Amino acid sequence: MADAQYLRLTWTDPVTHRHGHLVIDRLVRGLAGGGTRVRAGCSLEEVSRLAAAMSLKNGALGIPAGGAKCGVDCDPRDPEALPLLTRFVRAMHPFWNSYVATGEDMGVQQSTLNAIFADLGLGSSMRAALRSRDDFDAALEQMRGALSAVHEGTPLVDLVGGYGVAVAATAALERLGLDVPGARVVLQGFGSMGGSAARYLARRGAVVIGVADVRGLVVNRDGLDVERLLAARDEFGVIDRSALAGDDRELPRDEWVALECDVLVPAAVADAINPANCERVRARVVVEAANLPTATAADARLLGRGVTVVPDFVANAATNGWAWWLALGQVGPEPADAFARIDQVIADVVGEVLDHAAAAGVGPREAARRIAGDRLDRLAAEHGVEGPLPLALPAR
Ligand SMILES: NC(=O)c1ccc[n+]([C@@H]2O[C@H](COP(=O)([O-])OP(=O)(O)OC[C@H]3O[C@@H](n4cnc5c(N)ncnc54)[C@H](O)[C@@H]3O)[C@@H](O)[C@H]2O)c1
Image (cartoon, rainbow, N blue to C red):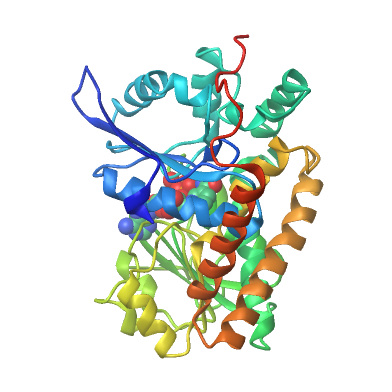
């Protein structure tokens, strides 16, 4: 799919000479969308793969839009990261005003994007997605409100994705005849995705026994106090170790993959489960909260060992789905509206994928790819690819 992508662009920052990338994998209705990440080493190749995954994510949920992705090559903790991201977003202005919608991703908070897009006069990072709305101004206002809403002290946009991961894990466990209450969970990553997945799995009665952040792994076989750890995070999802409970233990960061558990949730970096470590996985189910966390060869080996892997473009699709449902006017702005819709849609898709995998004798990833690809092709045939012209929205 990556060979035939609609647009691949690399921008060079005139100040630092660092790079930013924008890839549109494909358009449907003249629209594409996907997150913007800031990560040291982020390459055009990485952004291309992620953009292709975004198309599948939209296809899986039946959203009439193609996939896109942006990435800026910089450590998010670098003091230069914010000015660099701001210059990148500014340079990509015509895309936001025409056919690319974006949102937070690794190393970028939605609140940061909200401020940058407001300063640019574009109103919202999802502006392009509202093109088809007759009530454009009202829809933009509602989108701005939803993308800056706070629920239980945390931005709602940081909760919906992890909530979807918890729903996906629940659906997969139930398929295997396993109960969520008492299921042991280990996560790599404790930021937006990992943190909220942990919260909602714990609320469903699962026992979170291990959490890795960039500094290391925290383990408690009797269960970590998830809320306490969440409260001790900094803005980059790193846990203040002084907040650990007396019987919490610290282990080397990469040991998360080998902890015996029921559900393993990679929620940080790409290729986290790879040929070098996949034989160490001792989980029944892997639920991919991160994008591309399982290398292809490792995925095949896990499948061969009977480990159920719920693929990223299904398991972590809720943030993207929620943003598009809002844009399309398909969900109300309240948190309860979001959670109810995610409950229904993600559980249904996971069930459909696992059914298809069992019936066709393929792995869940291949089953999901077939379902998502077919659905997106049908949507493109129905709505067209390029969408109506002119592309540009009226200036505000
Ligand atoms: N934020 C979203 O809405 C969203 C939606 C779908 C998918 N994703 C994907 O989920 C993943 C995480 O995104 P996020 O927004 O939660 O990021 P984030 O920046 O909020 O958090 C990242 C977390 O991973 C940890 N981490 C980084 N490198 C690590 C390593 N090598 N080992 C262990 N921990 C490490 C960080 O310490 C932090 O806890 C990314 O792959 C992203 O593309 C995010």
